[in-house]
Image: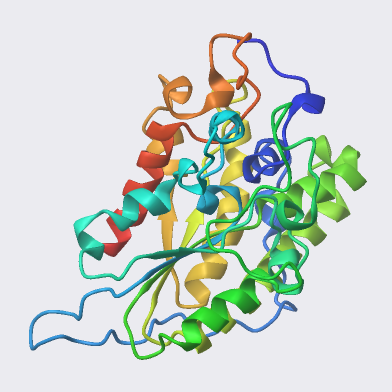
Length: 323
């Protein structure tokens, strides 16, 4: 497949990963001057009996386009429907909610917002809510598109999440989180030379910001939900089929996200392993990611979000650490 021009990349969680994967150095893990993380131990779960933990009572999906269930195909289906329904946007959260692990839950609340960064999650201003975003959606789409569970535009996603969790402190629930890669895309638009310079100061600064903001996010979530199981996603590298060496840098970004999660008592769901490692010699990208379509005329050929099958693989990554 022909390598796409960077200008065709859509604003998305994985747009950042795809570019950053070419440049992020392993040495760019944030310095010790970053915010002090919480202890690397999770609170003891509540127990429903002597041998069995209490069932999960809720699923809260947070973060960016992956938690939302974004793909250009879903946007096109939503925009062309005579009766558009937000449930068209199905992602890993929807599949996880139907798993037996969450059989005792009361349902899913999804505040994830496509385009969200670690900063906008804390401070507000997710582009999906305050858009328009012509670079994100196919031609003809109507903006703004809704969230799964609406909250006030002026309310940051983190505040909406902690508000929800305040009503569920006594319950054992699951919080899934995918966040950080849009930070990288924003950095690249301001410092494009970082695409070829692994020593770029802006790159190191961005990784430190992701670490510090993710520490704040996880600390606030834990304080609001002491009995919850928090799982953070480390994403796959959609460029691996074209640029295998980009996996080195993709692991560096995943390490920043994953290590920060572990240091703050969260679990890590790994999407890189099942997609990039298991298919290292015969990369199954076309089946899992629209971006890798062998048909350059496909209307979704530049979308590096997962297909339905790809979202299923990511759901299994979450299921693995919850089981």
